[in-house]
Length: 363
Image (cartoon, rainbow, N blue to C red; front, side):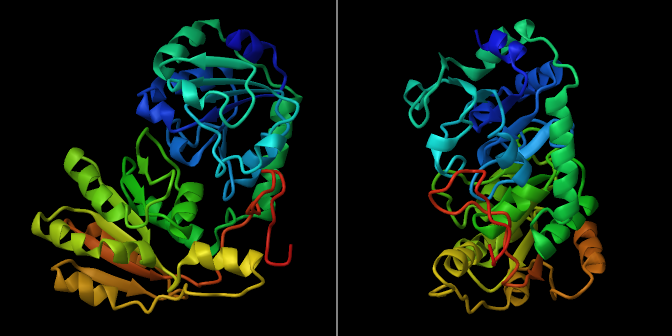
């Protein structure tokens, strides 16, 4: 029934959740996308399950999601959601999610099926086995008005938001990816640095982007990167963290230094708890409280642990510093000054539908 609904739909869309990675179903999910020629969006935890640059990726959905993903999900007529719970971060107002769509949901946890949104085709199963069963039944979609609409919307958005809505921080992350190995594992912390990374980094293989979803645990990136480096010593591992998250487990620099783990650490340092600052600025009339960080000298701290380090100012060309970081064989810390007003747009206000995005401070 799911395959039949997918085949008959004129405006199909896949939602890929973190369960695709947990269920080791990235290969099957990729096959479904490419065989059916179906565009997809991801939850934050689903990012990286399928190659970001294969032409079908619309980005990730939710409060801080990509405009194209948030816009097109409301126009779909059939949605297949795999390994996702429809949480309030990905679908803030579930009552207004895709009102014209028939919805199918596959999850191994029966309590997640239909918990947050009404589902027409519930399928409790291991996602890998379910996708293997569905794949032979799926027919490829032809070029239609739907794909043309997506293409047109994508072009318009890219013209209006050339930096992807992430400003200076997004541009820096793109430059960092250019100098890193193609098979780099990036570990993002929690906060604006996380959103900048998830919206900008182009994942090329499953599990190559690791972050903390659900409750969102600040301080996650540094110890998680240690595990990623030890577990996959053949891969380059990169930490992208904010200053707030980095301070929470900064003592792990001792572990990195002691074992000479070749982890590259980039601190996007805006001197604030950036995500809280943006929320206070936008939704609490600019009443900023308890968000400024009297940060220490991170370069001095890193060097004190025996780790080479460097700082770049927000108006400084980062090319030389990035080249130095890439050339160092062991660990390295790069402290990057980011303008505290470098927010993420668009953003979905609390209690509003995905399509109700705002695009700047004046909206």
